[in-house]
Image 1 (cartoon, one colour):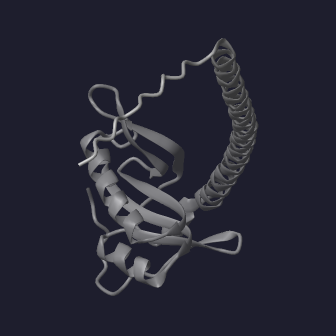
Image 2 (cartoon, rainbow, N blue to C red):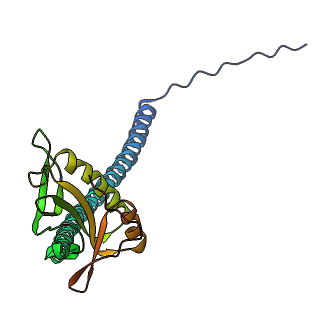
Image 3 (spheres, helix red, strand yellow):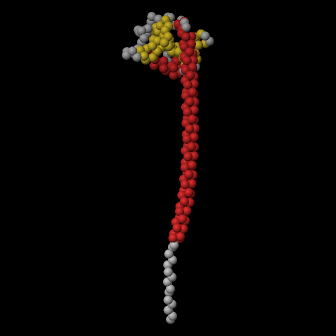
Length: 230
């Protein structure tokens, strides 16, 4: 068998030119990479800046809308307060008018009863033993023996009757000076009193009066009616 001898070629070493060329290529690639990075970073910064700008614009718009909403709420609240005051004042004015119309010569309506209730007082407070006001009486009629507490409403209903029943107990418990030692009666008066409330008030032992035009009418009591005394 023939033996073939291997001939080793001498290893080629890189020359200075080869190394320098490699360094230049590496530097070129690094510069390209850095350029792309800088471009990417600049784009990123631009996007961040635009996002921040949009956020600030959105926040400013949000703040503006909040400010406008708050302003609108305050204006609406002020209008509601004015309307409430006007309505409240109107209600008080109407209530006072009804009370005044009913109070005028009210004693004459009881001419067929054994009362001479010619003394009339309006808005009489009722105080307890600690001088704290418990209630008040819209109209108080009195003579030397009798007195009558009249509750006046623009539109009287059953709840007003119940409330006046509780008031009568307080008047008896803490009688004003004009009521002391006198027989106490009660009445419901209204600009409008529905038929069911008239019946309910009569069952409770109250007289019932209502406005008819500019005068006051004492409504007929049912058969067997007895005015309740407190």
